[in-house]
Image (cartoon, rainbow, N blue to C red):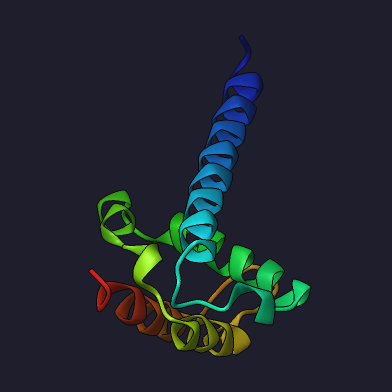
Length: 108
């Protein structure tokens, strides 16, 4: 394989792992009794997926794996969505990431 093919393959693997991790987190949140999933509109769900994908890409895997998404409350989800106001295009600000980490870490 050429170098470009290896690079592209690596990027694709990263993207697939991220999508899988986000989907697993969403499923845990959706099945949580503390989150009223039907109250979240489609745009909120899409934004939550973007947020989780951005966090997965920026945080250490060990930290991500310690999060217990099933214990998040509806207010926790609303707080995460509100913090995404600092999200430009596809990037969360450093302070937003820290605050989101605090929300997710308190549920460990």
